[in-house]
Image (cartoon, one colour):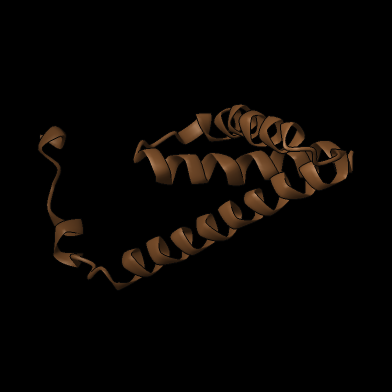
Length: 99
């Protein structure tokens, strides 16, 4: 059970890096894009003569970099939401649909 979880986390990290490079919001497709994005990286490493363990380690390092970037982005988003002033007066206004 541990190997599929690690592979999914690596794919999430690679998908996040693909999202950053392309500038597209992938949403739910981030993990599948990460799996697809890992293929050329791993094929290139194999073609350059790396073995299986170094190839998997390379994919893991790239995925870890993406996960760190994702964690930092979520932290920045949380700070922006927390710093946004709350318009309490807007909560007291009736909705146009409640007439």
